[in-house]
Image (cartoon, helix red, strand yellow):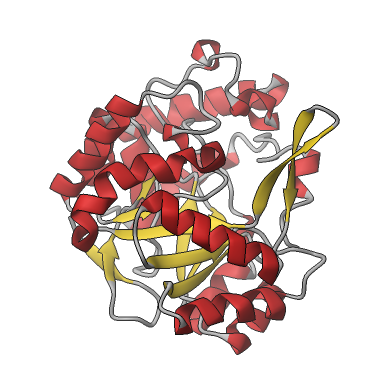
Length: 329
């Protein structure tokens, strides 16, 4: 494994991290035994940057990770997030967001308990709360650093303005945003901003929520797979994306790579301040993803990838209209 520096700190995190959400949340049925095997294999491979959130599986993902984290604490740089919460209303659960200091205080204690540790390495505000000034949210998070409960702070899906305002309150080590061959909207303003401020960009869903994989097949998704509700996995967008994947896979194979390795290498070759966190619950795919750190793409190869993408522009929105309302613009 190769390593990259986190923001302006001296922390060395693996060039490819491990997104743990899918082990407990959103992408079909759980298999905790298989997930734990994957976590142990990540340690073997030197993948020390693990990403979770209190929202994933309503805390179950943090509990799952704790089964490996607790006994290997010195080998893992753990990141988690707060802000989303489940609330029972009229006999069903709804998802709301709360970036207030009060909710953060409750969230941090619960995360520490579930993870079975006394300090979180990187603590993210999962979204920017439109009802709470970013200075207030980050100011409260900064207090956690002073108290020794958190080492570094991060933001997720934040706008350029929010990033700058937050940074004035406390140094931000990482920004987590969706970024992949399919999702490029951060390139215009967000990417230059984090680079200017010395913030590491942590792309989530770097494999297009599983689209950049050889076994991508919507017909195999179980009924509770959240991707079935996303525009990119429906109708004309899906047809477009299936064609796009076909040609990208052909190109990847011509280079002796998997589609996932090509997609990850495209990100890694952009700059040393980008650390993608592909998610998987299977050892096989973890091992394949890890090899992407060895891939160096030439300018000609990158141009070929860009030309393929231009041929299939009807990719669709990454979220539903409701979910996009939670993204800070």
